[in-house]
Length: 160
Length: 299
Length: 132
Image (cartoon, rainbow over all chains, first blue to last red; front, side):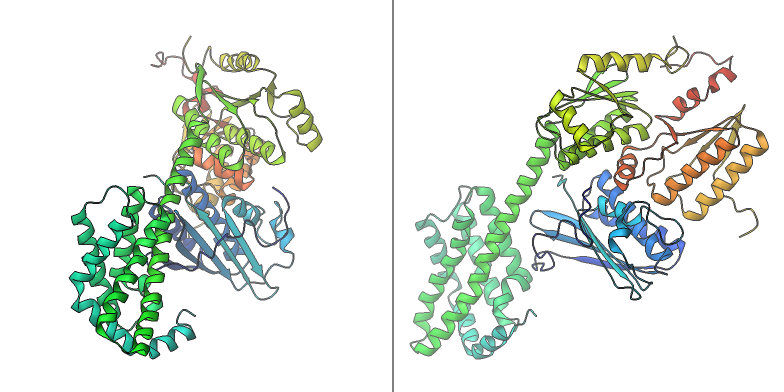
């Protein structure tokens, strides 16, 4: 992967937040405060990917990315929340994960994306790996003020 | 954000106009619907599939929904989106036309043709020019957005079809063939990109599981160029095959591509490579024979 | 939790080979308990080979991947060879995209092939020729 600079990859082409009324958007927020939460988050994310009609490989990608991000927030960020959205745009459906924590934040974002980077209990692949599993990925962090990661994967399957 | 200043002011200015337009819609529902159908037929604003009775049904529903939506107090500019019934009717109508083969422009023009009908009827309801103007502005606001919605729905429907077709095309362009007992091959032809490599990887791995294949050959004789990204994808595929417990052979690396790979500094040294598909098959058979005698298949 | 938390994953012994299968889901605690339990069993039985069937496992994230690598290394130090068998295609794809190669971990397509690789069939001389 090209070591593009921190923050965004493949920024959304259109403002998919402006969802016309004939599109519904479902959203749910889950706590990330214990190891048990990680498990129930995986279940919730799996259900959302199924709902969005994802194939089995994309399901696995998104659930794995959620697991990585949630664990990051739990281990490094001292807990937080994961918000799950079903999003729609022209012709396709996506699942968006927003993981927020109130932890110490990340000082060197570029470094945090490097495989093998770790600040705590040894989860080197968390961020960079999760970014590769998703279509869109943004991270914002202020040292001392926590971290917000937003990651979306679009359904490329569109089974009839 | 959505109830912008303009929406509020124009709405409050036009509350009289709103009532007037609603009244016109109610009082002349049948005439308006009929005239709209007539205009669409005249101006050839239709695809092929619609019968006249369907058109009338559609028109009646739309006129009724417009009146009902205007009766509320949601901002006029948003009604085509915010009013559930109106939104559904415009959406359905647009999709029906898209399927019938009408173009998106013609489809939204059909919705906009309703403006003309409403203005005609409005002229019968009032002679006051201020009132006429206010009502005309309101009709424009309402139907312009409905026309835009119609366009959007149409494009979206098409987009979904294109999406599905391009995926089907990908599936077809990456066949996994069985060359030998427990040996599979993917002959890749044409440019490789991320989407395509992902489909190759998915199909190949699934076939390995289904066939319990021990060796997968990826033949890139037909791949014109290899850049860093493609080489990475190939590496990923090889690694995924290994994780499943099978071996991978890459064949057909032509000299220019071999040079590129060397220049890019990509290490393929841990990967089994062969010049031709035939050589790769020979190597694959050797691999499957190795554990064979006392292993999986008896003798 | 008590002193020896159980992962709830059965570990069978067949000759000098240990066989275990992970279920569709593995939480962190169970993963660690499993590592602990398997390591203990290898050392107490003197097993030479370990087969871990993961054909039902639906997800391997970096934590579980790390556990598998760790387990393989530990077992090797104790004189046992570990084979991880039956990884599902979506799991394999996700792992490589995640950037994890599980280097050093031996894999097999199925439990049967894994056992063959561990030479287990030799310990069962009377077995009638397998169908298929």
